[in-house]
Length: 188
Image (cartoon, rainbow, N blue to C red; front, side, top):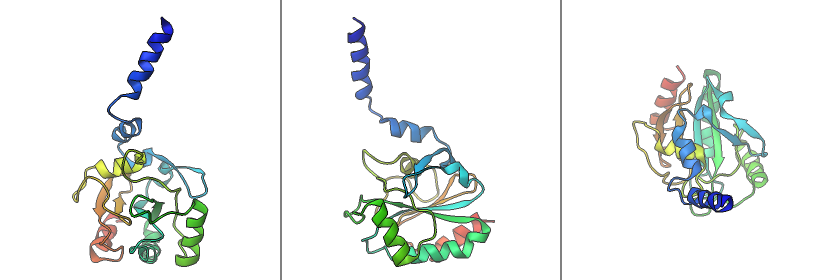
């Protein structure tokens, strides 16, 4: 009898309409409540970035927007002393434009664009296997929009207390007046 009850509960749990990662993302109120893996596979608690302004970007090595790495490095260099930190999250969701391993991505970023900002392990930024952090980012209130990420190099500007301030589409480059103005306001 107990086996049937346990089996029934297990089956019911598997058929819940909301995936566990979605439920977890919806309960979170701040980026600082998430833990992710860095590009070397080590756990990183994002609370370590409390007090910093963050620009979280889903990146890819073989995309027409890949040269934005150069702008991201320059943006961080310009605003680093004021507390800006860019965080790169490789994703292979769009056109399979991030096919490499974490080691290959790390090598490409450092040798091609001299990326010196934190890079994280490859994640999924949309779909059923969407990383909880990106579920949070795509559903959090902001003045721009909610919903799925449209393509590689979408940018999420995060306040010092971990809230989503702004969201910029791929076509809005990191050195655009719109991004610069938002970063200047956020680092005050």
